[in-house]
Length: 70
Image (cartoon, rainbow, N blue to C red; front, top):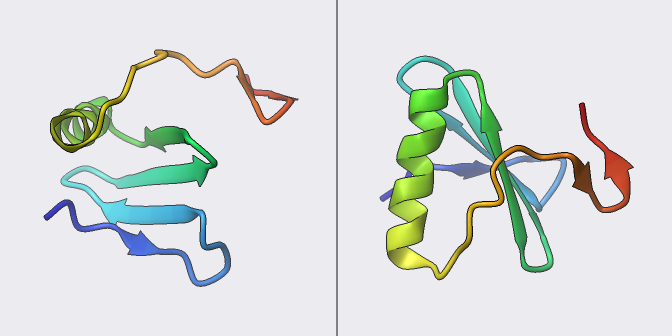
């Protein structure tokens, strides 16, 4: 089990308390945005998810739903 909890304010946001901070997943249609406070926790979650889902890592986020991310 990955251990995420759905946000009470947004059904597309999932939050997990990682070993060194929070990890967040935002789901929009067929896209996942994974972020957090510790790269090791993020990489761990990506590895777990890729074992269950057919996914492609697009690396650093630049745009999401028409919004520029910096």
